[in-house]
Each structure stands twice: as C-alpha cells, then as structure tokens.
Image (cartoon, rainbow, N blue to C red; front, top):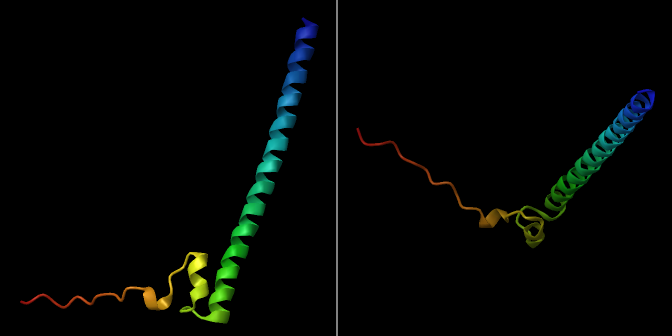
Length: 80
C-alpha cells in the first residue's frame, strides 16, 4: 500500500511540475506574440508617417491607399 501511495505522490508531483512549466511557456509565447504584433503595428504607422497614406508602399502592408478608398455616400433626408 505504501508503494502505491508513493507512486501516486510522485505522479502528482510530476503532473504539477509539467503543468507549471506549460503555464510558463504559454505566458512567454503570449508575451512574444504581443511584442511582435506591436512591432508590426508600429511599422505600419511609421511607413504611413514617412511616406504618406497615399504611397505605393502601404499596399504590401495590407492597407489601402487613401486614394483607393471609396468615398462614403451621403444619404439625403427622405421626402416628407
């Protein structure tokens, strides 16, 4: 009975150790992904600030040129 108890305790300790390691790895992954996303957003802002919103260099970043955006249509008041 004591051998089974010791085996159970060892398995529980192994499980907790792996769980804690996984949590640490998850937190590190999230932090790196967040840093990468912030750098990409900063790059987009920097390209727009340096070259302008209507330059050809904004298209490869997944943005539309300012001149290619569709102007919003104004809706008049309905006739009474």
